[in-house]
Length: 129
View 1: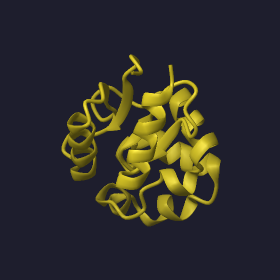
View 2 (view 1 turned 135 degrees about the vertical axis):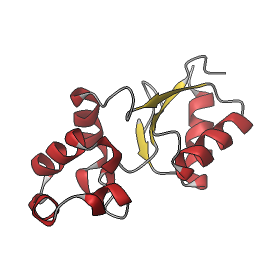
View 3 (view 1 turned 45 degrees about the vertical axis):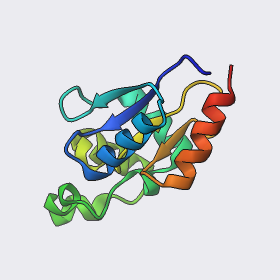
């Protein structure tokens, strides 16, 4: 079994984050939770997520944090650079959870909670030595 915990990024009161954490716990997967509302969102993490996942997937345009932004800010998000600026300024606009499955994982980072995706990722995580 892989001894390295995965890292789940999000906010604790997000229903999707709660579902993901509960499911991972039910699978006996060790994890570290990073609350980016309290502990921040490092630019280097965001850059890695943007490179792997793309800004369209990472930016949660359906959430209340996005809708709370003024129209000018929302309209200005047209590419990676402008999305990056909004995501850093307002970390709760990040679609959650972001999961780092660790070195050697393909994909290393996933966004959101999708049970088949998580099942496959945990199988790959367990198979890595």
